[in-house]
Length: 330
Image 1 (cartoon, rainbow, N blue to C red):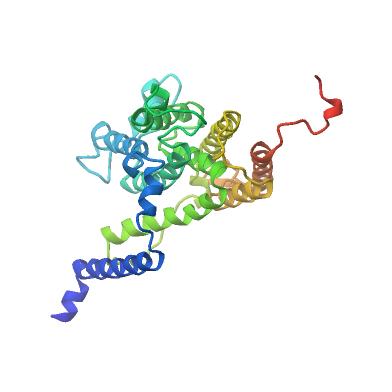
Image 2: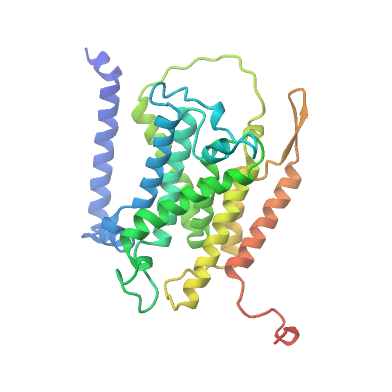
C-alpha cells in the first residue's frame, strides 16, 4: 500500500508542494519583507500584476484553441493554413505570428513570454515616471490604459510585424518572445540573464505538474540537426527590435528627467547580449544544401553575435556628445 501510494502522481505532487511551502516559509522568515515585495510590484503594476503580458498570453491561447481548433485535439491543431507561405497569402501572414504547431510549441513560447514579458512590462511600468507626471491626467498616463491596451497592443502588433519579415513558412510567437527579452536586456541586463534560468524553472515546474512521473525508453530517431530547426532570423529580428525600442524609451526618459532611467555600463550590456545570444543559439547561421544536408557557419554566426553585442553596448552606454567634439558639425 505504501509503495502504491508513493508511486501515484498525487503523492509526488504533494511532496513537491510540501517542500515548496517549507522553502517559501523559511525564505520569508529569513528576509522578513513586511510587505516590501508586494509594494515593489504595486509600484510598477496595477494591483501588482503584469496584466499586459497575461492579456497577450490569453490572446495567443485563444488563437490556438479556437482559430486553430486546438480545443478539439490540443496535441494536433490545424497548422498548414496558418503558416506565412507567401505575401500573396495574407491570412497566413496575419496568423502565423500567433499560431503554433503543437502543444509543446505553444507551451514553451508562452512560458518564456510569462517570464520575459513580466520583466519587460516591469521596466515599462503601468505608472508614469517622468518628473511632474500625474496619473490619470491623460490616456498616456492612465495605468489601466497602459496595462490593458498599450502593453498587450504593442506585443500583439509586433507579432504581426515579425511575420512580415521572417523568412520561410514560419509559425510561432518566438519572434515576440525574443523582442521581450531584448527590451528587458537593455533595462536589466544582469537580471535578464538570471531570468533565463527562471524561464527554465517555470518550464520544469510546468512539466512537473503535468507529469510527476514519466516513463521513457531508448528509440531510434531520424531528423535534421537541432540547430537547423531554429528560425534564427526571426529570433534575431525580434531581439534587435526589442533592443531598439528599449534604447529609444530609455533615452526619452532621460531627456524627460526620469532619475530612475537605467544607466548600464558598456561591458555589462556587451556581456549580457553575448551570454543571451550564445544560450539562445543566435550563432546558428546555416544553409540548406538539399537532400537533407545542412551546413552550419558557426564562426560567421559567432562573429555576427559579437558585432550585435558591440552595437547594443554602444547604443545603451554610448555618450550623448560626439567622440570628437572639435570635428562635430555645429
